[in-house]
Amino acid sequence: MRRTALTAIAAGIAVALTGCSSGSGASSPAARAATAPTAAAPSAGASNPAVPQPDSAAPRDAGAAVAALSATVPNVREVKTYTADNDPNHLLGRPHQYLSKTAFADARIQPADVEGEDEDSVTRGGSVEVFATAADAQARVDYIAGIIKNMPVFTEYDYVHGAEVLRVSKLLTPNQAEGLETALKS
Image (cartoon, rainbow, N blue to C red; front, side, top):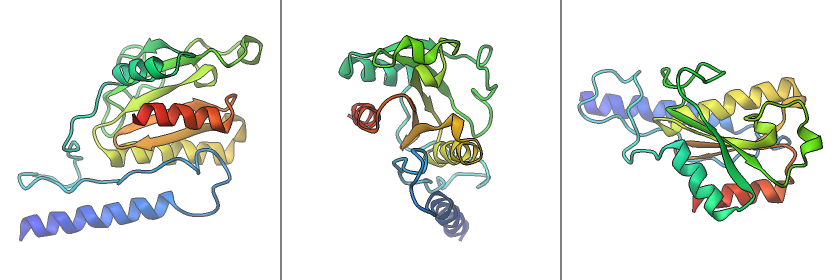
């Protein structure tokens, strides 16, 4: 009985999150973000359905994801791997936030276009954020989309693949951003 109730709660959350991620036209890059299943059913031994259960396959580290990305896309190079001490957002390791984050630069972006930006700014290339669950990753992209809707100056491309979020600079073309997404998936 308890397992059935937990499964029903997880399914309800998944439906609610899916409804939030769809909606009005895909006009911004964040709204066009690729999506993945948003929640995994809690394990039979879960004691609290409000606490996210890690997805069955352990997500890779953001640094490993960026290394794989740079091996496929020669224009990409790792810039910074964050720790809980140097994360400017103060999200790393916090409940429902990313477990690892790595910023990268893309050589196709002209230095003059990013003058004054921090070395690890998404505008210089992008970043990969890895979460414990796909639902947490989707919530992050939904949050970023809300910011972009209210402040279009922060436009970027955002893609969700399982528990990974790929954030890509608005200075890349849609085809270049999609190429990074494809490389990250492979």
